[in-house]
Length: 123
Image (cartoon, rainbow, N blue to C red):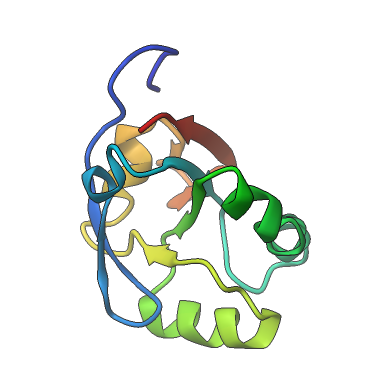
């Protein structure tokens, strides 16, 4: 797990619209709030991401880009974003399975999914 002051692990993942999103693309432009969650459409994860959705304007006003990450396939994430009205990228850490979650120390190897974890990354 990255410690405070360390450089965050770099990644490029596809979002729900099949667009690649690279962490370093935000460097010098905005902070990034990376929110790892276990599964799309689960009750607790939906409640968590809906809270982020409802506060999205506050994050944007503070120049913070929100990125949600799970091991779900991007097709699942597209349906999830549409169903819940998420206006921020949902990134698929599907393959290699959980590689980014592993780099951030939040992957549950035994269960095969990302545990909840939130990281605020400075520009």
